[in-house]
Length: 286
Image (cartoon, rainbow, N blue to C red):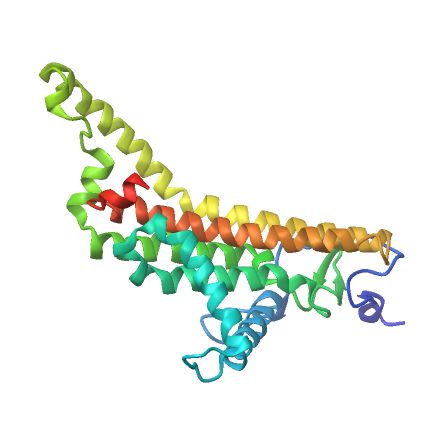
């Protein structure tokens, strides 16, 4: 038998055969080494992301079709899901910002949720190769099990979008005051103590700047770690027990995928709301 075919693994629709339990490769498998576009490859996670995103768009379009005043069943399901997420993030970003930020937030939630769950679709994470180190390289891999995908999502959420909304709707002055300004009320304390608080708030601002810089790191590694860990868990449990016993772990992955999509979306809303919510006393009181 040729060496290439010796390395091909046969899997069930939901995971490994019961003969072996291996670790999923931490890096994406390159389906095409060089596309000619700046030398960028096409990986298995990229292909899966494109296919799942297209299916998501088609599913929503088929469910909603042409929106009507009296919603159809599919339209009602989509509207209930959208209104539910809006109800969660509106108190965080504030009524002033919900209109402009909600398209981003609902897109992040839907995209991340579906890609978190994509590893449980039959055929995804089911066929692939074993490399020389004994790691599995699937031909289809969940997008969020690739660190490149989660880093891109984190940069869009906590750098590009955050910077746009903050400078567009709050401004550099409010941002600077929020980071380094003296938040104490001079009418409620001696003047000397009030003046001494300036270097303290400035030092706290420097710490906050460091936390802002590390936001993409925390967002990307949290999402990647949970999804990649779930892939390894399902791969190994189905390698040991092919039927029945892995079922509870699939339900666990459904829950983890939902929680991680909510956490990513809510944290993005918090980052925006912390700066852009200034002056909205009702939202701060809430």
